[in-house]
Image (cartoon, rainbow, N blue to C red):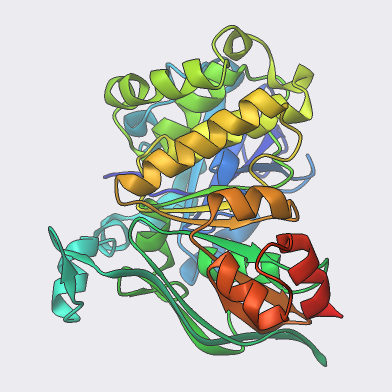
Length: 367
């Protein structure tokens, strides 16, 4: 039985209902729910919360519940096999993850073929990401209003807009973290809501404010995420090492993540987003907090990935960076798309001279 990438909730347990000895950690996997994909992700719950309270809920929610000793947190010991073996004291709570649930995963490209997705050089659709009248309301507030766009292989597309424009909402909808009120988001022919498990396998995401476990080193964090994703560690490290060298993360990886600066956390989050060689990268302010030389190397790295066929979506307030890096930009304001195209086309739509800065065009567009 394989382990499916998803939300892992870790909490120290020792209460009577779990029957797990004090000093163990209880890990609950809510399959496919990557609320913080930079850590694959991990969040904590109150110590008094008993995962076995989920026994009733488990009949309708696919949980994987595992008891791990604190010593098992050495990532060399937390591998896909050990995560797939529920400890005896957890008992029936692991049952909903039984074989029927794990078999539902299916092959992404097989599903693409069944749905008749148009192939592009080796069986990949020409449009990696398609948003069709995508919208999200929070009560009476319209956070995103019928956004439509396409992102193709090898493109770097900038998502620009003031605070509250709908950029983060758009990314969360693509990640399957929010359910759209209307419209749809499709990745390689798969619905980002209905097929969220398959989508997350081939998507990389780096948040603006990455959060990691303070007590794990950078290397342990990478190993842990690779294990959760089911990526072969040796092969992944072989491809990751050049990236780590370019980002100058080598020595830092041996230190606990709790002591990392914001810039170092950003570099680690980017490395994690690239670790499984995704087809689509969603990056929220990827160069924010980085020194100029490192920011230049990150831009070069993203351009190389795009040249290799990876689709890249960058949300940023750094308009000079977007002007240098992006093939196209989308400008959103109050949840609506108000301009789209190359930076030259957006300048024309804004009515500013061709030699004007992208900032001047942006300010003219949003009023």
